[in-house]
Amino acid sequence: MDTLEAIEGYMELFYMWGVAANDLWAIGPAYRNADCIWHYNGIKWERTPASGFIEPCGIWGSGKNNIWMGSTDASYWHYDGLSWSKFCQYKIEGYDYALTQRMDGIAPNEIFAVGFAQKEDGEYKGIIMHYDGKNWKQVSIPDLIVIFAKILYNPETDEYIM
Image (cartoon, rainbow, N blue to C red; front, side, top):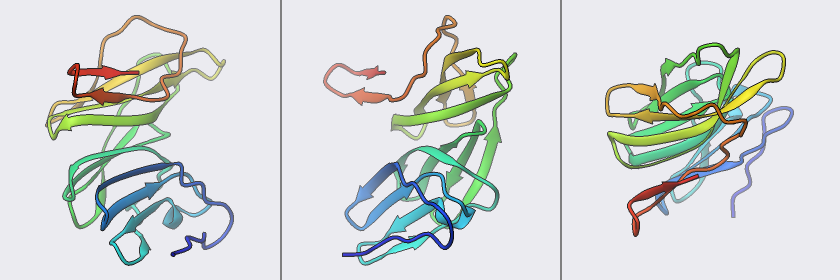
């Protein structure tokens, strides 16, 4: 059994994704950026920090060399098998910030992320983002006063469930 410990302060690893028993990822907010992203290689857990500030929230991949992660600042990060790099930061028009809660997909060019956008005055709406293999874009939906907290793909019905 392996124990994960923060270098300093807190560490809250809420989200996991894996491609195999020897290739698992655990992510979440932490006091130090170095404690936000952990990888399990089948033997031990190791820190795999991003190259910039991140508070990761959602993670999904199509393989060990193509993993995506969302952050609390509407950033999307990509892992290419060697390192994490910031792919983009998406601005939701009319809102001060956006947060990705969860991600799911069926292929490298068919990935969805859900969460919410919020204004400084507290007004918020649910958001759905889509990655088409080239860019992350906001899916046009009616403004709903909701926080999308989860998304799952159901292969039996070929539908995403939120």
